[in-house]
Every structure is written in C-alpha cells, then in structure tokens.
Length: 152
Image: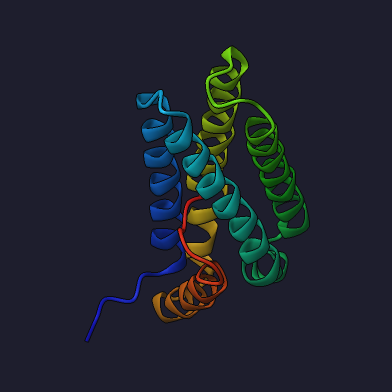
C-alpha cells in the first residue's frame, strides 16, 4: 500500500516544492523559463489557498480553541503570497523588480511554513489522531490536485 501522507507532511512538502520553484526561478535568466516558473508558482499558490479554505480551515476552526484566528491569519498569508506572485507575473522576467518580487514570494512562503510548523501543526497533532490527519491530508491532496503542480 502506498504511503498516504498526513496533512502536516503534505503541507510541508508543498512548501518545499514552492521553495524549489523559487530557487529554479532565481537560478535562471531565461525569460521563457522564468515565465513558466511564475505560472507554476501562481497556480500552486491559488490551489494551496483554495485547499486550505475548503479542507483545512474548517478543521482548524473546529478543533483549535483559537481556530478562527489561526485560519484568518493563514488566509492573510496566502493572500500575500498570491499578491506577490501576481506582481511577479506582471513584470518582464528580466526586470530588476522581478528579483524583489521573487524574494517577496519566498519570504511569504517561509513565513507561512514557519507559522504552520509552530502554531498549526503541533495542536493538530495533539487534537487529531494519526488517521484523522491522514484523512485530512487526503482531502487536501485532492483539492491540491485540481490542476497540476503542488507548490504553495
């Protein structure tokens, strides 16, 4: 039987994939490659935000004492990441401002990952059993799969 990741593993993997896309963007100067990577980042950010909104946030609101605050903060971070990616896409891939925007994307992703690791994952592990976390992971994975790459 294939390993079915729990939600915390799945989200950590999505953050790592986004960092990989950002690193690839920074490493190339080819405008076509940068454009394709920016599109992948945009698609991943939108899917991540939607998956959180549909699958994870309702669980956070239900099981965490401050779930409303945690879900709202996650939505703000997701919006910041999406906005940075949209600004990046609005620039010529070789524009000097593109380097600033890709740094903003990376900062937003790292902040989201750090907050999840510190504020979201520990209470989820405390309040949800392994099976429930795997089931939530499967639901988030289905939501993320609605369209390709899984980056944040």
